[in-house]
Image 1 (cartoon, rainbow, N blue to C red):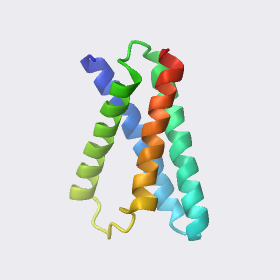
Image 2 (tube, rainbow, N blue to C red; image 1 turned 45 degrees about the horizontal axis):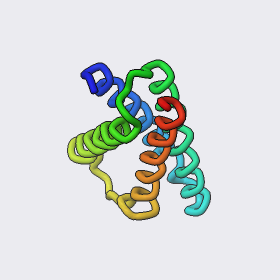
Image 3 (cartoon, helix red, strand yellow; image 1 turned 90 degrees about the vertical axis):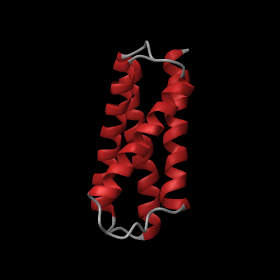
Length: 119
């Protein structure tokens, strides 16, 4: 995996994260059930959108597994930066339903799209 691929994966991760951040800012006024379903749908759609574009225009990416690993590391770096330096509110969403399940959705979507586009 070359530096262009890593920067591109980080960019797709950042754009996905920004969309999800916007959803969080807007979605906190929804009822809990609607919020969870909307969160999962937004997570899938945003990830599928940006990583489909990435896979389509950068077909020389490594295997789907390593692309997913690089993306997940990118997401965690973004979250470490944001939650340590910018976000000062309560981290109520760092739980299984609001954080672990979406992480699984993101990883599965990236890997699945990689299998679809690269093989």
